[in-house]
Each structure stands twice: as C-alpha cells, then as structure tokens.
Image 1 (tube, rainbow, N blue to C red):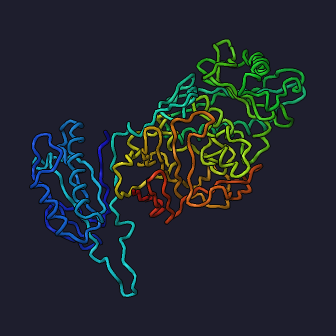
Image 2: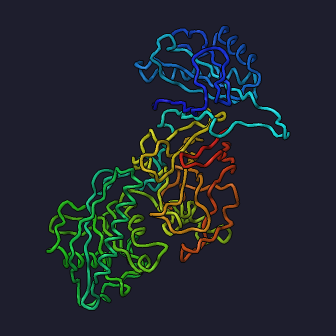
Length: 539
C-alpha cells in the first residue's frame, strides 16, 4: 500500500496542537484534536472517543473540512495502515452523522513520535472570512488554499483485470508480453528498399530517419524513459526487384487478417532476400522497411506482429516476427505522418489493443464517437487525431507509470476530495492520473492534457485541460474498452482542419469550472495551472 501524504499549500497553517489558531498569511484557521488511545486492534469508537468527536464538531460549527488521520509509527508494518485507516474512517463517519453538512475525508500517515502511534488526529479547517462581503458576494477559499489529497487505497484494487473473451491483446491488467519487451532496450532495424524502376533518394533517406527518430522520442515520452527504442540503420538501399509494381499492396492485403498472410509472407521474404546479406539482424527485435516515396507501393502499409506469429521473416541471424512499412496513406498525409503509423502498429507489437469499437460501424448519429470512443485522445484508437499520445491508463497497464504516479480511489469512500494532477506528457510528473474504481470491472480515469508542440498537430480548439474517460475491463480488442465523457454534447463535433481527411474531433476537454457526474461520482475542474491541475471529486 502506498504511503499517504497530505499536501498542504504553503499558505496553510500546519499545526500540532489542540487549540484554534490562524497564521498571518492563511485564509483557514486550523483546529486539531487527538482522540483517546484505542485498545489493541480496535477500529470502532468508544463512548469516550465519540464524546471527543462530538465536542470537536460542536466547538467548530462553521468548519468547512473535517479530516481524520490514522497514525502509524514509522517502522511498524504497513499492514498497520489498515487498522489506523479504519479508525480514522470511523471518526469521520461519526462526525458526518453529527453534522451531515461537513466535508469529511480520512487518511493514514506515519510518525516518529511514539506518543501518537495508533491514535487518530482530528483536523478541522475553517474560513474565518467566509460570509457576505461589502459587495454582497460570499467569500470563498482561494484555489491555492485548498487542502490537496493524495489519499489512496491499495493500488491493486484499481488494477481492473481484463475479462473480455478476446485476450490476445491487453486493454486492462495484466499487460501481455510477446516478442517485444515493455521496458528496457528494443533494437529496431531500419532497412531501405528500392526497385529498378523506383530508386531511393537522399531526401527519402532523410525523411525516414526523421520519422524513425520521432518514433523513438514518442515511446521514450509515454514510457517515462522506461522503453528505449534504438534504431539501427546503414546508408544503403537494397534492390528488391526490377519493378515495384510486382510488390504493390492494397489496404486489404497489407496485414491484419489471415486473408493477407500469403502476399505478406511473399513480399516480406523478398525484402529479407534483398537485404539479409548486407544487414546484421543480430539482436534485432523488429524491422522497419523504408521505401522511395515517389510512387505508391503500399496503400496503407504492411505490418506483422509477434502475438500471432503469422508472418515471421527468417534472417540469417534468426526469425523476426514484428515488422512494418508505412505506405502512401501516411507518406501523403500531413495529419498522420509515418511516425504516427509506426507508433500505432508497434503498440500492437507491445500487446496493446485497438481501442475503437468496430461493432458500432455503420451508425449514423454519433457514429464517430460510437466507433472511436477515445477519438484522437488515444493513439491506439485513432492515430489521425489532433493530439498524439497514450492515456495514463495504457501507460499504467504497460508498467510505464509507477503506482506512486497513480492515485487510486475507491468510489465507496469518497466524500469531497481535491487532487492535483501533473501534465500527462511531462516525463517524471508526480501524479499522472486519478483512477476511481466504481465496480469490479469499471473505473473512471482523470488526467491532465496540454497541447504538445512536438507531437500534436496545430489546433484551432484548445486541448489544454482535463480529460476524463471510463474503463470497462469486460471489453478488449476492438470492443471500445475506454470511453471519453464530456461536459458538453460529445457528438457535436469540433472542426480541426489539420486532421485531414477527417476534420471531426470529439469535444472532450474539461476546462475550469466544468463538471460531470459519472457512475455516481461528480468530478469538477477547480483550476488549470502549469504547476498541475486541481480537480474536486465528490459523491
């Protein structure tokens, strides 16, 4: 279980006494009281402790926040957290029973003061200035004065287990590993192919190096540096045959189904035959084939994956199952360049699902949202959107986000809590997401988004805000396991002209003041800031 930390603004008074006080710079006054000692492993309140809670509530009738902290001695087993947390919960529940208007929450913290071990500390926060101002408006606490919570339960309860019948690829826990590891170094061979009537150029060579570099950088970012893709290339073009026409492949032929396996194998074998003698494939985990751009060879691009081992390529050094080559769809599409194609297809090599819902194809009303429930907000759903990234949920499943970067919340224990979340694409950010478990198979995920000049396309509608989506672990590959929610009508699409050929973008960003209730949980965006976004979660 993760240590629980209460993060308090520097303007707040942090007290260790049992009398009211107010610091010169704080807008809250703080009152603290330690309850009488609990006996042994008791987790319910005695009559004396109830009387202490009651006296505290009555002595602070205008308190805005009632915080109960169970205290564990720092070198005691982590299992003691459960006991002191239950004690804290009992105290807050009793306070809420006495005054239903109280905003309560409970937590557990370690201490090096033996006299506090095993006890419950009550902290009440009051806004002395709260009331009518000269203008007749009601004064409210400033956002920076909010008590921010990192309260969490065992992260394991939020790691929903995938229960879809389609389990070859992962949408929920656990991650699935095939030929490509999720962390560490992954070696990718970049092999340049040409034909007698279609020669590679210096411009082609530079283009593919740039695309490969973006591919490397993207996975470094989303993996928090845990996945190190290293591209290996040599400046040599290998001639496959006299004419490229013999190797042309339509979208229906370039991978993804058993109908395409024969032509995929024939062409893949020819690519290896042309390049094997001049390429050392030792230690290579995957291959990217780069081709001249002057003519269309592949409509979208062939791709093969280790999870089905359908089209393995036998080199002198061994068989490689994961390989791909971007076609005209990516080469001629500024909204979906070749590196984006690499990222998406390589995601399948890493065991990730397509997050679209192919069963919904053909709907007229809200068709894009039905088929692409994450739209352009998850590159494993629609890589042609204006923002190119992977969700915090995907990163957590893959092991790229540590448990310490994800705040797990049980919806049954929510009162009114404030959480601060770091920008999703900020490598090393502290809290990348809040995950609220609402059932054994469902959760709500909250994360902070900002437009990224390196990876995203220019936009006309701001993408700077909070994104919220639901997780359904009963759904897997091409079944829409993640689904965006919006404070507005998400089927009233926004226009983004740089996402050619489809201008439609889901209106899913939450800005300051936006709020929504999902599965009985209300989420409100309190503030957006470069130092982190603050959201309020309540029942």
